[in-house]
Figure 1 (tube, rainbow, N blue to C red):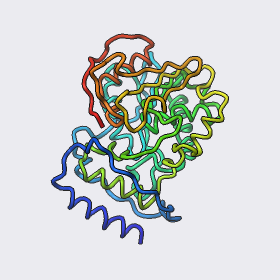
Figure 2 (figure 1 turned 90 degrees about the vertical axis):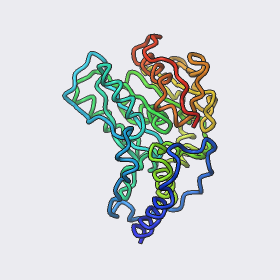
Figure 3 (figure 1 turned 180 degrees about the vertical axis):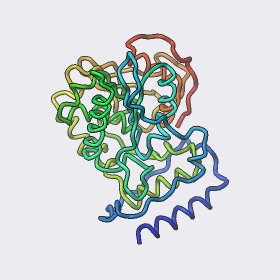
Figure 4 (figure 1 turned 180 degrees about the horizontal axis):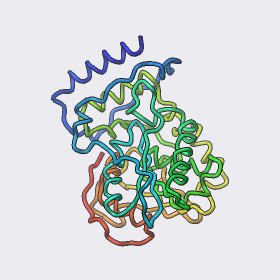
Length: 315
């Protein structure tokens, strides 16, 4: 029943959106309160990725190559809420590969019905999944340490996993979090992460959240489970971990004061301090070369202008 209903709605969204713009409105629309998750959601058949997404030149991440060798730590990239490994930080992943990094990613937190819309499940559940993947990367590559780079919810997880999952902080050296909602946020318009497929994929992402639910949304809200875990933690960034929090003064979804962590060993970076003309918003963080520069600076612990400043997307 749920599969039939969702398939019908997805078809309607696709037909309605065929002439939609490739970019989302910079003014986000409110997200309805998630409905209860059907008990059999993971037993329903998968729905295919729409061509508007899979055929887009910006879609697709490198394969995880555990035979890759580099003098640098392997980097695990963590996508944001309602995204997946093929649309969020995937372009950065290719760029890091060209720079000589071994990079790895996975889609986490997806319901079985739509496995390409991730980050929706309870964050504690996803944290355990991510921790297992980080351990796998460290073990299979033989590296002493692993670095984490996350965007949005992925940035939260890059901090949350070492804090909550046994043994992970000991194999993580650097954490780079882009716009993480550490101190609670109200998520309006987070399906903008899907805008490379236009209104088609944004509508689908929203429908998935409405029909199957988004416990992760509640977890990061003010008063939610992850918000509370951070608030009650003795320290968020674990001993031995070097954390860089990258924020945009133009981020209207997760403001800098929601991301900032004032603890020893944490480098809080506002993009506009380096690239003052950049108006990049929350979703735009994943593609912005100004942000990529700061990520590489954090990973390599330097201040080199490895990418030029640019004016990112204000979404």
